[in-house]
Length: 426
Ligand code: GDP
Ligand code: IMO
Ligand code: MG
Image (cartoon, rainbow, N blue to C red):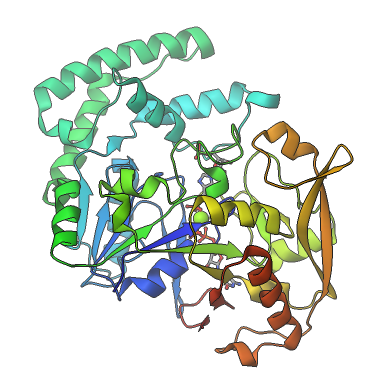
């Protein structure tokens, strides 16, 4: 099997978890390389639904090694709760989960900072984050003085000393900016030590592990979190997350060469959603948005927030295909569109009277573009039972063909329901 990368091409929640689960058992290893507990990846198998935040979506297969890579913002509390919840449901999480000793820790002061900054922001500085401490953790990593890697907690003396200095500084900031008294370093230390002891058997040098695996010809599935349009550099900045969550971040976040990626599978909903602030040219504010939100259960897996809904945006899709060097497409949640008389696709943007040829870099421009839509006929039938393209209504087939044409990429997977089985492979 080739080394595949599953990547969201929109603003997250495209259904990456379902696709990773579907492809995992054909690989030896699944690695998460970016983001943290801001992600929520759903996997549905019969009556069972799993929401994974940090653990790779290959975990339901005992023989697949799941690796949390160096680029992940690691929240030990969320991780241990996730392990407990999976084990309580009979899922084996043991030697099949490895965690990078280079991953940076999300500590309680990161979550507090995220929360306080969001609360006190408005207008252009409000981002609508998941409040999982992601931005503050990656900022500390980049600043270097304040970052703590997972491996460091196993040197308790130096960890305690560094933590003390950091918490002292953070508390001054919390007090000055937010009149918040801050946190207690000892309490954090004790709690982290406890969690770290428990997780010790899982800790590895994941860079060495993955490079050894590649040299031995074992196959890796790279599991993206978030989506290309939330990428720190290539998304709709500043309304993005704080990591390179496009495929460009996969080599760095996993610690392997870009040459290791043989094939990139771009995952897109058959429409668009977005959670949090930021421009969204194809957004709908009418009864169609409600229809999509209710049929697609478009409420955040991590925060429960209602997702903003809109039409499929081929301009953003083309951009994302280029950035990620996408080889093939997985079109998700096609079943949600059943029952609509007409379906629109955004094929171009108009800005100040002229047509834009490409996806604008400036979010202020993107917020002002006027979407140019093409209207296709819808289909009435429910399609969740379909297991081949030819079983789909003719208009659903035409809709997929038009997406292929507009994005110049073949559709290789179509998803018609949350369940593992509700999948068409082409
Ligand atoms: P991820 O973050 O990309 O893994 O996506 P999420 O799990 O956050 O959101 C996708 C949602 O759509 C989840 O609730 C999935 O169970 C659900 N889902 C995935 N594929 C389909 C599909 O084809 N049809 C329907 N109706 N739901 C789907
Ligand atoms: P998965 O992996 C959807 C969004 C947040 C917010 C912005 C910044 O499930 O697709 P952050 O907490 O990262 O600082 O928030 O990014 N966001 C996501 N939206 N799916 C995700 O992950 C997301 N992770 C972050 O809503 O707009
Ligand atoms: Mg999600």
